[in-house]
Image: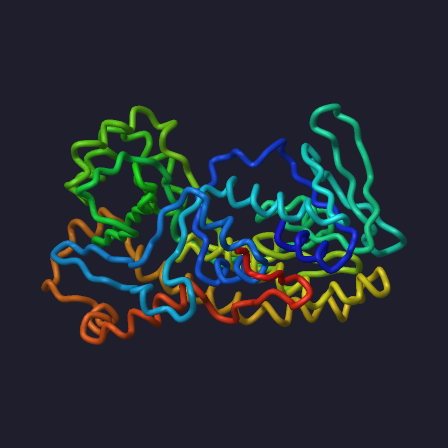
Length: 400
């Protein structure tokens, strides 16, 4: 949607195909980071975004068995936004769609499920899609097809591109629990040997993620929901008065965590960005914002050629990948290290192992001793490496 908006502002004819009738789905990655908030300001959408219902995350803490440590202080960020916004993703997408549809060269086609690619000779020349209301099959010709359809990308599969998969030791259970006014505010990570949970403050409820070892979903569910509630209370005793709101396993959704990256993000007439090019772990909640940065870079590098010649070369598509390659690799490397640090042994083994002396890990000791370093951790998450800015031709004056 971001790429469509930017290309339309360049005067390029662009069509976005959306599989569903609307955006009202249960997204779990609803964080909009400071880098994306700055981009919205540049696009003249900052005030409209600020009017959306949202919570603001200004600091992040890690709770250990014996103490709590603050790991990120977003008040130390540069620029106008010292926070991460937690916004229902359907509201964010509606805002972008409304802005894009104000451009005469933009079309949003809903209920359009892409089923394959069409080819002109050896090059991709558009897509095949099915109207999910009528069942009719259609083709859409395009000088450039951009696959933004996530880690299960149909376009990627049709192009025969296979990502390199990095081993991930965990999956995540997502669920909601009521939040009380006396609860901690912001984001909270709870770490114990072999266990990790994250709680995201959504106002009247907690969006909760509980890490389980990869492939253990069926086995743990077989032990029963009361056993999971007890495990959760053992980790976070102050949730004891509300875990009964988890009434069935239907309330606990499994996220199959993947960490993948294509070696080549393009083919003749085809570019892949976001999770279609590089599936991210939930660590840091950076996936949306990294995908937005991909879109901005692609628009800046490709729009001039599309506007001038109506086509782009492989060399131009390669430049998009080269631009976004190293920040992607850097973030994924950090996520892989975090996986090893957080869930490096089975919970059962951890429970039976002798307890070590209650001492903060070295990184947390440094962050506590020199709080200024918490600004660096905040910057890595909320801004990230190589933030992208809107090209001049896409910017509009700040709203009054």
